[in-house]
Image 1: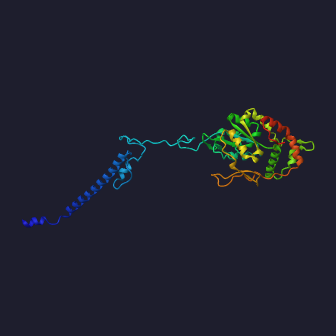
Image 2: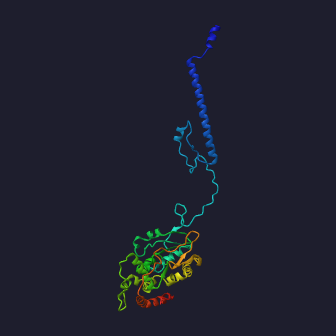
Image 3: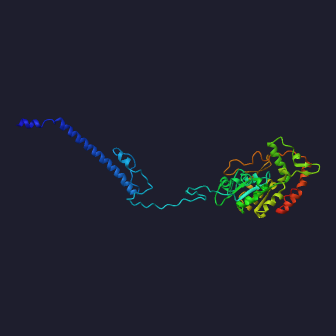
Length: 365
């Protein structure tokens, strides 16, 4: 009997060994799963305390299927079963003028211009534009849009889209010198805004015509002589007013069209001659007309002897001085002094009437 008992206490049978191995493996798996579950719950608990939505952060071993069925984490949506934690008070960000509808701030808004440099060609309009752009309260379009003479059919929305963005405190301005001699321009500008301020840069009409011809000659070397284009019959002193270079200088005729829509107080005349000899003084009057402080002063200018006119000194935003392009300040072609005298006599009555109309003597005689 003792032998039989001792025989049963011997080594376990193979089937029993397999059962013990399976039980041991199962125990280890359960322990691992419990540990993973406790870690996951700990993350969820912290999320609850922080007021974050209840969602799984990422895959973990042994729980991939659970993650695939769970909804993605959306921090912006609170869990319906949980009260949202009160958000800390926030200070609203400052909004710039011209913020778009989505709330993202923009550097201003594109507006229709409140002021226009409407003329005249070869009078000094580019200089006035470049000088006034130094002012922090003015934003100006750099190119000439020719909206009120060539592109009016495109509509005001197209015109507005060309403008630079401006703040409420800034003035939007553009320059197209051909407006002054365009018959329809005054009415069209008035229809846009009767409050538009107009700037006209004028210059001795004889000098202006020579400058105009010099520019054309640089592009078309084969054109007739200045004398040939200026007169229908020089012997009789018959000036050809159909030539645009001559007709532009008959300022008072063009001004009559503008005075039908705008009062004289709404039009400012800049002397092209004084713009060269006293740029700060002329620009001071422009700033007064626009209703902005006199920011542009003598300290902004220096005289460029090579070009023969003032340039802007370097500023904090510009490392180099700014002068007008190569096409500005070019040497005029030599004209017979008798031709010049004849043209001066032709323009004299127009000039005098112009002085009387605007109440300013430009001393071109």
